[in-house]
Amino acid sequence: MARTYLKKATFTARSDAGDTVATVAGILSDIEARGEAAAMEYAAKFDKYEGSIQLSDDEIEAAIACVPQKLKDDIDFARDNVRRFAEVQKGTVQDVEYEINPGLIAGQKAIPIAAAGCYVPAGRYRHISSAVMTVTTAKVAGCAHITVSSAPQPGSGLDPAIVYAAHASGADKIMALGGVQGVAAMAFGLFGQPKANIIVGPGNQFVAEAKRALYGRIGIDMIAGPTDSLILADKSADPHIVATDLVSQAEHGYNSPVWLVTDDTALAQDVMARVPELIADLPELNRGNAEAAWRDYAEVIVCDDREEMAATSDAYAPEHLTVQAEDLNWWLGRLSCYGSLFLGEETTVSYGDKASGPNHVLPTSGAASYTGGLSVHKFMKIVTWQRATREGAKQVAQATARISRLEGMEGHARAADVRLAKYFPNETFDLSGGD
Image (cartoon, helix red, strand yellow):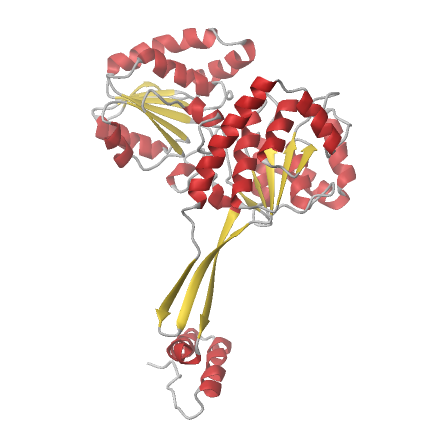
C-alpha cells in the first residue's frame, strides 16, 4: 500500500514533551512533605491566588447565582446525556457466581472506588464540560466521595460555570487549586479531603506528568498528551465541513495534531485550500493555536482505497476518529483503534467534547491502540472471590501442592497439604510434584 502525503507534519505530539519531570517531582515532594502550606504557596505562585481553597456551601451558592439560567440548562442537558450513557455502561458489569467444579465456586464482584479526584482545566479555556464528564461518571459508578480541583483566576476565584457544573454533577467538595498542586492535594488528601484512590481529567503537561508520577500510589485514567483528531473522508464528504472540523480540533492547542485521510485527491486539495481561511476567521487566541497546530502537526494523506484508509487510521490510533464517507456500517465494523468514533456528517467531535454523552476523556498519542477512554468502569474495581466445600477443595489442593513443589514453592504446597490432612485423614495422596 502506498500513502501519498500532501501535507506532512514537522513535529509529532511527542516532539514537545519538554523537561517537566524534575519540576513536577520537586513540587510533589514538597507538597507531600509540607502539606497544605506548600500547596497554598504554589497556588499563590502559579495561579496568583490567595483566597479560599475549599469552597464553602455559601461560596458555591454565590457562584451558582452568577450563572445564567440558559447556561445552567445546557450544562444540565449535557450532564443528563453523560449520566444516561454511564448508566448503560454500568449495566454491562454484573456480579457473577460460577461453580467451576463440583463444590468449587468462584465469583466476580464490581465495587465502586471509594474516593475519586476530578481535575478540571481552567487555564487557556474554561473546561466546563470536563467537570460534567468526570464527576457525573464517577457519581454513576457509585464513588462515595468526589473531589473537584480547578485553577482559580487571580482575584476572582473559580469560574462560576465550572462550580455549577461540578456541583450539579454531584461533586462532594470543590477546591480552587490548579496544576500540580491541585493534583497533589487530591492525591495526598489535603484540605479535609480523603486521599483520592483515582485521579482523572485532562490538563496541561504538568498535570499529566503529576498524574504519571503518582500512578501506582493512586490510579489514573490514562497518561495523556495533546489532543488529536483524524478524519476519514471520501468523495461524498463536504469539504467545507471537513475543513471546519479539522480547524475546530486544531484550536485545542499549538501542538494538537489533526489528520485528514482520504482516497480523493481533489477533496484533499479543496480542504487544504479552505483551512487557512477558516483559521484566519477565528478569534485571536484560538487562531494562534490553530495556525501552529495546522502548520507544524497536521497531515493530509491520500490513499488508494478505503481499506488503505482504514489501515492508516488504525496505525495512527487517533483519540478522536470521524468518518465522513459512504457505507458507515462498513467503517464501524472495520475500524479498531480509536478513542471515540464519530460516524457521519451529522455528528462531530465537538458534540462529543461537550454534550452528547460518551466521555471526552480519551487516549491520546496512539494509546487508543491498547486502551479506551474514561468510562464508568474506570471508577469500579472488578474483584474476584472463591469458596469451596471440603470435597470441592480436594482436587484443587492436590494440584496446588504438586504444582507448587515443581515451582520450588514449598510453603505454598504445605498450605494445601494441611487441608488434605485435616479433611481426609484416612486417604493417601501423591503430592510430591515429581515427574
